[in-house]
Image 1 (cartoon, rainbow over the protein chains, first blue to last red):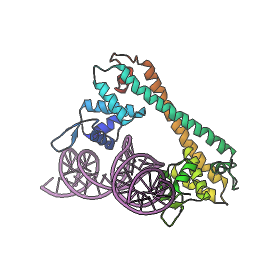
Image 2 (image 1 turned 120 degrees about the vertical axis):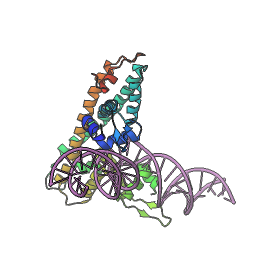
Image 3 (image 1 turned 30 degrees about the vertical axis):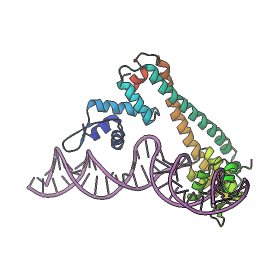
Image 4 (image 1 turned 180 degrees about the vertical axis):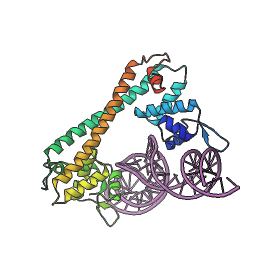
Length: 129
Length: 129
DNA sequence: TCTTGACCTTCCCGTGACTGGAACCCCCAT
DNA sequence: ATGGGGGTTCCAGTCACGGGAAGGTCAAGA
């Protein structure tokens, strides 16, 4: 398979796949013409990476998870720890965003949104609330 | 006021304040020795920026909002539109993160997290679910 | 056989919103 | 004179790619 084929089959852009090779996440072979040659195992790894990234894991998390994936003697506790740490980060982000949403919703609701200049949103940002 | 003073009073790092000057969000005067000299008006702007950033507005949004803030003949509708657009972005992010959280929570809950190698998290990422 | 067009390669720059650090200047107190 | 705590500029790095240039390769059609 060439890079276009794995791009299609994995859903990842070719650019991303080259980048993953650059940073050592995958190591496809090369044809005589210099083209990358991907095998099923490479595709499998790319799918793994795509799913992990879709769950929001960082690239470094992915590196760790892939190493654990390939390590037959891993302890599931190690995997769980990585996932749980990530979950904490996500929950923090959600909380932050929900706080923003609340404030913003209040401000938007309080704003007339007409042709007049008076605006609670700007009043709040300006510290005149 | 020197940069350290406004940094203290606004809560923004000096680096950030210099950056805001770089990109044209503020324009403090200069003393003869080259030091930035901030006035109350600059501090006010920095507080505005700090609050807007804390609500997740992008720098470009901040630029727009500051312009509207300074424009006495603005229409509150313009401000409201910026805020509403931002609210939509936030809600999209929240939805994405909640979806991630759900999947991750399921996986974490399903993982024994002991010394054994068997792990539903890795099974899922590997596409063997 | 030649050409076209799709594919592949590397390389470099840009993104957003800063942060870290180097190298240097300025001012006040001792 | 010196030391320390300000300030200044400029450059590089962050994260995870994406855009685009310049050029090599391959299969199909005229």
